[in-house]
Amino acid sequence: MRVSDFMALALGHPEYGYYMTRDPMGRAGDFTTAPEVSQMYGELIGLWCILVWQQTGKPDPINLVELGPGRGTLMADALRAAQGAPEFVKAARLYLVETSPLLRSHQAETIGNMSLTPNWVGHVGDLPDGEALFIASEFFDALPVRQLVRTKSGWGERMIDSDGNEFGFVTGPADRVYDLLVPEPLRQAYTGDIFEFSPAAISTMSVVADNIAHHGGGALVLDYGHISSGLGDTLQAVRAHTYVDLLNAPGAADITAHVDFARLVRVAQGAGADTHGPIAQADFLRAVGIESRAESLRLKATTDQAADIDSALHRLLDIQEMGQLFKVLAVTGPRQAAPPGF
Ligand code: SAH
Image (tube, rainbow, N blue to C red; front, side, top):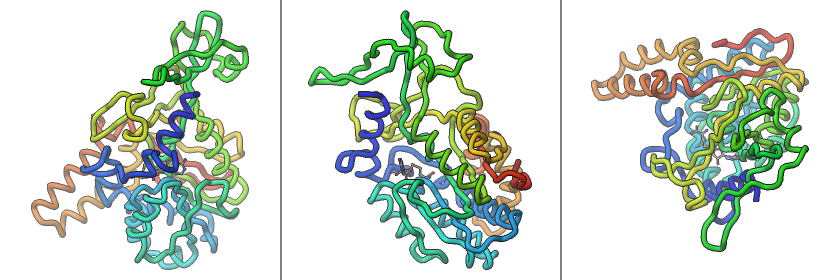
């Protein structure tokens, strides 16, 4: 099967899929994400949404959409920060795009007593039309990728096969169709080189950008990945905070791939939306005021809490941590002002 089919099943199989059977986030889980590192992250994203809403003339209603909300932590922090803007809360309709029933129930718990009642959909295509603000934090990296391999006779597709006992990679026959899927500047590669692309990421961004181009609003994509499309195998599997063999225990480890931001930019612009960035997460968070937010939290903090704030800042901003590898891309409607942070 294609790598993308393997990844889709390993993550999303209704019975055995990774996201269907467990809550992977946090220290006891398999990986830690930015919203779980600090409340400041979700709060600043909430304020970003309010500012973009103000920039577009405070439309009422406005759809507030989060893709892949995990435990709901980011949205809970965003909504708490939005309490200072009751007009926004009154106008906002909350939509959560989530496939996992287990994580939906976590989100219901976390957001349950907040000011907005969540509506769940399984796919961006099921969202209602209208001006919207989209947030996607470590969502795009979970979307399945296909991998093409340069062979002596042209590009073929990297596939996963089984001998009945274990899985292994094989390369399907070369075909000119694959050549066309590889961007022209990358086509003349060395034998064995890999080109990745995510049909699901492309179609998700196209739905989001199309909505923004027609109705206005904005999207904020925060994820790890590369700024220009390139060659290379970026698939990785993580279990209990350690890298593991991708093929070894499908459904038991998280599988992700680097987000190709250049591709998302081309898709968004192709749909008629404007793009801003991608910029490094550290630059974005500093520009929207994470340091002054940390300062005001420190004023009320115990010594232990102050140490936690400092370590969270380090984790989110340091170039050895999430500061540089993680990027932030914004999408807005044409003729809108540049969004905060860019
Ligand atoms: N944003 C959260 C969670 C990131 S994990 C955080 O940063 O902590 C990825 C999230 O996307 C999970 O909630 C997962 O269930 C969801 N997800 C993965 N693939 C999806 C898909 N194809 N459609 C909808 N949600 C998906």
